[in-house]
Length: 128
Image (tube, rainbow, N blue to C red):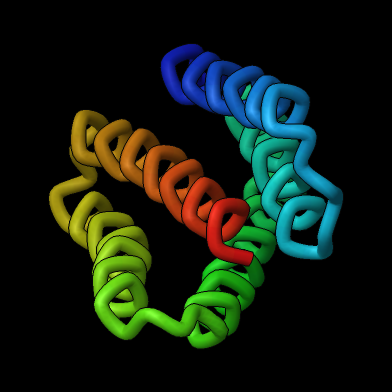
């Protein structure tokens, strides 16, 4: 178990659920898939399992393309550019973290991925 990544995922799950409750956000496909991504992250970092690891990576990839599609629906081109830049940073940081196999880079990617997801969902819920 990777405790730092697990508790990072748990904290994001709590923040995410709190936001859903606080802002009375309607469930959508994007919201459900994102929450599923948090669950797969918890499973991946809570248990040593190749299946959970693969499921988490597949879910992250699916979320990437869902977010990319949703960004294209925003009317404001400036917001689109900002969100695309934030989104592109996630896979970039992931691949960078694997080059030196540095645990700190892996944690940085993980934290950024969750922060980026929360930023995107906030923008998605405000605008959509």
